[in-house]
Image (cartoon, rainbow, N blue to C red):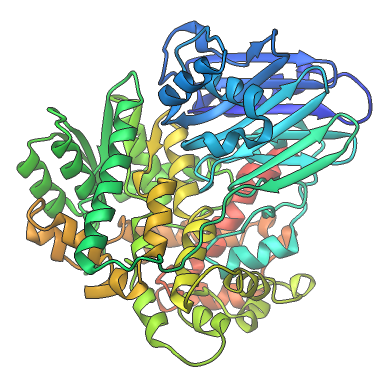
Length: 594
């Protein structure tokens, strides 16, 4: 797990290492253990390393194979790299390191751009072909690892976060109208290739990009799962047994492939608790677990310790729990937002940031439960969508998910930003993609392949890597995803959602953890904006910088400020927080890069 960056000149001039020198400091937190750079004519690359596998200096990057004429910078972990090494050795390749980075390099030498189809893991990497002067970029199937880029015809830049790109200079920092529409209507999700800024794009998940120094470009999608029933039907018990086996394999892979201890972010919910139970079944003797909690606000609980403590007691984990007062949350809020590669409205982004700070002092790798709710229908809006049979697929989805309908969006933004319904067009296109049996099959596939990428998955990567902590997500193992998407939605939504996981957990976990109402990583102070938090949001939205930017319609802002606890989205986010977060992100990350 690391940070990568690079520049390819498209105008025939050499790539200056000075550009890499400006980018690398903005990646240091992702990789505190080593920094390196490489240049070859029009190409320069940089790398910040978090040492997880093969801790020796031999696996420092950029990694160069002069004999093959290849160089690589890589962020992520390849879980099947030991098996791939054996296969590649059998094909005549020789290895000089014990890590997974060199395995990718040899796989590319053997299979070219199809190497990604042999990789099982989370990854974003760039390979330079010295002889053909070709740059090859790739991102994992579920987009767990980020890869941003910028191109202006004279140069192509890439990096693990937008801050590194902005540090390179010369990036168009103006607001992208499509990105803005998605940001304010789709819970902060801006599907690739767009971002909130015109000058920065991101490589879609399961996609490779080949670019020559002459400017020739080819993009290829290499994976997209179907959501259809298998030819041989399975019964309920067979489905649950198959899911259990696939999940246990996913947990095991993410435990073994590391030369450092692996912990668990234990929220107290079913998903992370089940990871602890499966690790215990795999024979892990001393499981390291970590929980965080915040102050209650009214009836809204700020921690789930009553559930996580039961899991700790049952499995005798070595546990640390952290309780953060609201004054500390407010103090650290700008710092967390400054480390977001894109503006992220999920309340748990700040929670993960503060938790990762503590956890990173004890371990470098954790497993986390992201993806289970999307894959197995764990949110309250899924049953609502399933029961709503009126209108088009887009209308059924929008009624239960969109933060703002297009009409309210037009009231939210200033006149110059009032345009087409970009979000509606995007969701309609995604729901209409082939290879799915029913409406809910389409919804759940869209969520796990698109929406989750730019919401919880992005938040976890950003907020953990800000402290040099690698988060592994077994529920987003692509083989488990392929299997779960074949499961009938009715079975996944049974008993309020996540029925297969509840069935697997029965007897392993306390019933109170299994049968509890669905919880969320709680931070009530960012939902019910009161006192100093409300003052903080007011200061942002009434600031000179916000007024000059002119994104929001003043009357709409005044309405939210007058009654902040009366304006929530359909999935219970604060509309005031959404606007303030976006403006704060722009002030901290874009204005400061001017």
